[in-house]
Length: 390
Image (cartoon, rainbow, N blue to C red; front, top):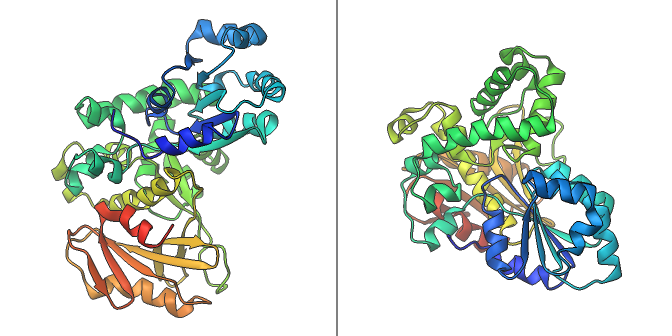
């Protein structure tokens, strides 16, 4: 197991809350992490039909058979169990009593909100970060990283990323999607997912997505919600403070794992990545998610946005911390050009208060300090975030 940065946070919060809930994509390492942190806890996977039936038909008996220290995996499979957990927790507020995991964020959040509000803390675990790979002394080039992505099993077992991500996609469609919604034409849904990959790092246009897939705008919206619910894609929102009425207010589409996006685009080796017309978008996707992982791995919520106006001036990533703003430009080139700083300069001129600090993340290997802008290699996004004190 590659050590996870979230581990001490999980252990600390289990000493403060009776229930800790960890959500994230399938195969992001939730179960491995929880069992490593709590090796003496009983473990129950609610994907197992017999255990799920036991928990559903006799919840009191099920929980009584595990009176202390229980990891409940894929808790969204038996949502009614949360009401019984609430009763037990209210009887005894002993910290760290239950550790819950789930891979469908909206289902899990609904369960938590209804029954365990105020009794649990929420953590999110995404696939491995570059920071974690570096700590494990695993080094890969940019093109290889974009191809492979960050799912732990690929690194732990030395698996072929193309085959593994293909299997992941098939399993996801067959299992998660069928649980969340009855989709009659799975081939059409898979086409929709691939078209989403073709729009990675771009402004979301549901009408266009629906038209190109051959489904209605309403269907496209419901399918996108499915992808969000199961941690396949997420929408990066535009910065919401109004500095001009001529701002773009449409979110941008990203994948939680860049390797999955690359697979869906048909990339099978590094040469395909290097020559792909969307390589810059994939690189941007990777960097944005690295910033998101940095926040989640420290038990914090997302503070990520982007900024763009109708003239096309844009900052790829805007980090907001209270009144402080940290604009970040992302470029897939390995050689720095003066044009790389244009978006940062435009934003600084239009922002109501000057940015606290600005940064450029690129595919090169050297750190630089330009006038008012720090330059970071993609592998050092975590160091950049630390320098911003985020």
